Amino acid sequence: MSERYPVVKVRGIDGQPTARDGLILCFFMRRRYPEIAQTVWLALQTYLRAIPSGSLGWYVDQQGDMQLLDEQGWMYINEKILNRPRAHACHVQLLQFDIGVGGYNFEYDGYQLDSQLLNDEKAACAIAFSLPTEYLLEHGADKVRALSLELAHDLPFSFGYASLAFVAPSGQWYSVRRELLPLLDRYRGFDLYHLGTTSRVIGTGARGAYWLTFLGQPLLNQLGGLEVLRRELPFPEVSFESLEGERLLLTLGEWPSPMDIREHISRPHFRALARLLEPYFPEEKIGLTSLLENRNMARWLRRFCL
Image (cartoon, rainbow, N blue to C red; front, side, top):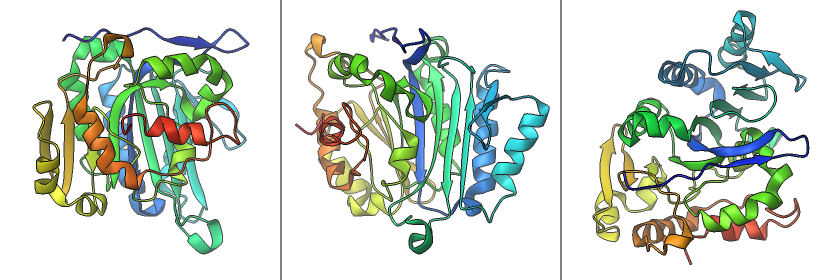
C-alpha cells in the first residue's frame, strides 16, 4: 500500500464530529421496495457479520428520534423492512452513535416507484453501508472489495460504488459544508453523498467514477457492454469482473486513493470512465454552498470530467 489516508473530523457548532473519514458502499436499484425487501435484509446481515459486534447501536424511529438498537429495536427494523409492503416508502437509519458521527452506519431508502401518485419517476431504491478508514487499514483493500462483492451479489442494482468518503449519514455534512469545501477541493477521491437526495433523482443512471464502480442493467448495455468498456478504458489500473445477471465490476486501482491534488498525480482512467458515465449523471437538488445553488454540486460531480 502506497496511499496515505487523511484523518478527517469536521465538528459542528456543538463540538461533536459531524463528518469523518471513511468509506461508503452504495447501491441503487430501480425496483419497488417490497420486491427487494428480503434481499435488503440479507445484505444488512452480511454487513453485520463483517463489522465488529455491536457497531450499530442506534436507530431513527418513525418520529425522527434516536432510539437504542436493542432486541426490541431490531424487531422494529425487521418489521419495517420486511413486513410493510403497502407503505409509500421505507426509510431506515442505523447508526454507531447517537451523538456525533461514527464510522459504521447503514442507510436504506426504499420507494414504491409509483410515478403518478408519489412522483417517483426518477427515483431508485438505495442502500448504503459505511466503514471507518481504520477498517480498510486493518483488513486491507481486498477485504473491502470482497465485502462489496458479497453485498452486491443479490442486489438488483443498476449502479453502485465503493469509495473513500466523508462519512455523514443522512446528509449531516450540510451543516458543516463550508468547512468541507477545502477538503473536497483537495481530496478528489473522497465522495460526498446524501442517499436521500440521490435516490430521488438517479433512476437507472450513474453518479460518477469510483474505486469500485458497479454497472448493472440497463446502464451497462447503454454504455455498450463489456467489450466497448474494455476498448474505452485501456488502462493497466482498471480491471473488469463480470458478475451474474449481466452486471460488471470495474476496479480502478488496488487501493482506493484520496487523490490529494498536492501530489500532482494524473489519473486518466478516472477521467475516461467519468466521461463515459457523464450523460447518465443525475441532477442532484442540494447545493454545496446553499440549498438553492445546486450548480456547484453538478460541477463537483463532474470533477473528473474536466
